[in-house]
Image (cartoon, rainbow, N blue to C red):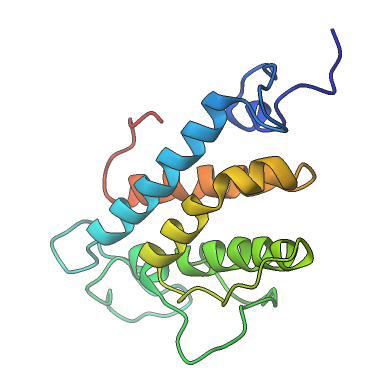
Length: 176
């Protein structure tokens, strides 16, 4: 059977590439990716870094007392403010996971650039997790059909982010 009509996202989730009905992703992967974008928004809104919401963390490299908050949660709650441009730099001295807003903003910006080449005139979405996940979900069908070279890496980023947020909320057994 020909591999040219095989889903490029299935391997991201550990499945054998299924035959797609619409280029370049099967229906199940499109649905799974849409569900994960909703999960990201829901999990991000549920994040709680206050003392008592989980284990607090010591600031690495110091003898200071714990800051009274979960640093990994604070990392994910960071937002992009006062910026008309997405963050594009890889800052080598940062420790921790990339904030959810930054991950989603980078994907949205790439999609927006590709859509501009196709004649779409869109403003950059407000860089908040709920707005970005909604914006991406609204354009998911387009991305699955027009971005065969990058939709799999975007799906992997979304999958990893959804898992990271679920784990931060204490839900490590959730399946998507």
